[in-house]
Image 1 (cartoon, rainbow, N blue to C red):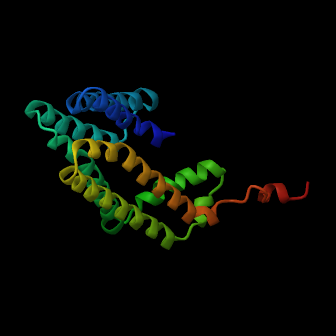
Image 2: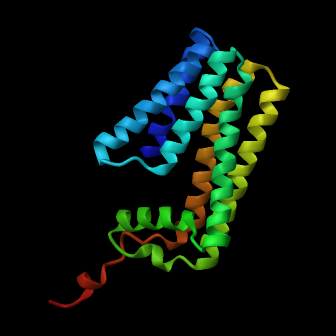
Length: 197
């Protein structure tokens, strides 16, 4: 659900671009990103660092786009964000010793199963998943700017909305497949249930 909410600004960006132009769409993107930050603050009393970074990039590049009336600035937004994500995943794992993909997915698995199921996932698989997302985010960063400078503005907007959505959901599906064998069998009784009363 959270991932879907993060795509709402993109969908609105696409709609306003089609109805008006890139500059109104950029202004709306800046506004909806601010609303996301406010929503996180008022619902959880804190704003993830990731959202602050996304908001700062949207405001800086969006402002440059509007002030100079040049859409080239906003085209760099996705490339900068995904490049930062890729470098963060890589740096955290090999320089700090933290696997951010493992941290994120472990909490999801444990909350979903009410067990420490994520602990059964072998460490080499977590490393593969981390490298997979390093590659995915780096590829998106490169692909976005390539399309931005080699195709029409209309094609780039379509890619930014529908292409990024498709790549993201395919990547999530691939991640689920890699973790599937480590998910608990719902028919398998819990250790507490199997004890005789």
